[in-house]
Image (cartoon, rainbow, N blue to C red):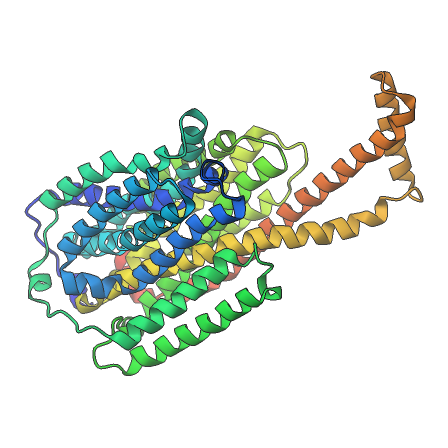
Length: 522
C-alpha cells in the first residue's frame, strides 16, 4: 500500500466538505451540457448563425481541456485551496459576464474565461476528497462526487430546456451566480489544505511543456468540436488542426518525460491501477456524453420533441444513478471492485444494444426506459473506477493524478460526442443509399404505399391533380425518417460494442488491490 493510505483529520465534518466541493464541480459539469439546448436562442439573440453560435461551445471546451491537463501544476503553484476558490470565484464572474453579453465576440471571450477557470474545479474536487477521506471511506465519498460527474450532464439539457422555454437563454448563465457565491463562501470556511500541501515546494514554470500542451490540447479540442461542421478531413482547416495537435501532444509527452521539473509529471502512469483507471474513465466519458447527445437529438430531430420534452427523457436516468450509488458502495465491501466495473460495462453494452431496436413510432415511455437503462450502469462504473485509480497512487502524485484523470474523462467525452454525431450523419447517408433501391415504381411495396397514401389524400378531399405528387412527398418523408431511425440504431450498436470491448480491460486491475478495497468476494 502506498503513502496514499494515510488518512487526514479534517477540522470539519468530512461529508460537509465532500458536499461543498461537489457542489462547485456540479455547477461546472452542468454548464458543459446546459448550453447545448440554448444555441439556437443565443444565435437569434446575438444576430449570429447557428454555426457561429457553436463557437461558444468550442471556446469553452478548448480552455477547459487545456486547464484540466495543467490543473495539478496550478494547484501546487498557487496552493490547492486558494486555486480552488479562485476558480469558483472567477467561474461565477465569467458566468455573469456571459449572461450580459451583447455580441457573439463577447460571449466567446467570456466562455473562454469560464472554461479556463471551470477546468480547475473537477481536479481540485477530486484532490480535496482524497485528502479528506482515508482509503476505506473514499468509495462512499466518490459516490457523492458521482452526482456531479454523472448526474449533471443528464440533468443539464432538462434544466436548459426549461430555462430557455420559460425565460431567456441568459438565465442558463445567471443561475450560476447565486450558487457560485454560496459555494465560494462555504468552501472558504470548510476546505483546508493538508500539512504536506502547505510544505510543498512550488514547481517552476515549464515554458516548453506548457506551450506544447496548450498547442496540442487546444488544437485537438478544436478539431474534435469543429470536425463535423467542417466535414472532417475533407477540410484543410481540420487537417491542419489534426497535424498540429499530433505534433503538440507527441512533443509534450517527449518533453515531459525528460524535463527536470515538468508542468505535468507523467510518472503517475507508472501506477498500473491509475493507468487502467484513466482508460476506463475515458470509456465512461465517451459513453456518458455520447449517449447524452444521441437520445435528445433523436427525440428532437426524428420525433419532433421540444428541447424540454427531450430533456425529460434523460432525467429518470439521473435519478436511477442517485439511488444505485449507495447500493454499489455496499457491494464494494463484498465483491472485488474490478468485477463490479466489469458488470457495469457489460450492463452498459446490453442497454446500448437494447436501445438499437428503435422504431419510427417509439413512444415517450419506451425512450425513457431505454435512456434509464443506459444511465443506470454508470453507478457501477464511476465510483469503483475512481476508487481503484487512486488506491495505490502516492500522495506526491495526487495533484497531477486528479488533473489527468479528469482530463481523460472530459477529452474522451468530447470525442464521444463528436464521433456519435458524425456516425449518425454517415450512417443516415449510408442507410438512405441502401433504402433508395426500394424507392422505385419497380418495387411492389413502393407502389402499394403510394396507392394507400393517394387513397388517404382523396378521402381528405385533396385535389385529384395533386394527390400523386403529395403521396410521393409523404412517402419520401417516411423514407427519410426510416433512414434516420436505422442510423441511430447503428450508432447504439457501435456504443454497445465499445462497452463490451472494455470489459476484459478491467482484468488489468491488480487483483490484490481490488480484493483489498472490496473487502471480500473471492
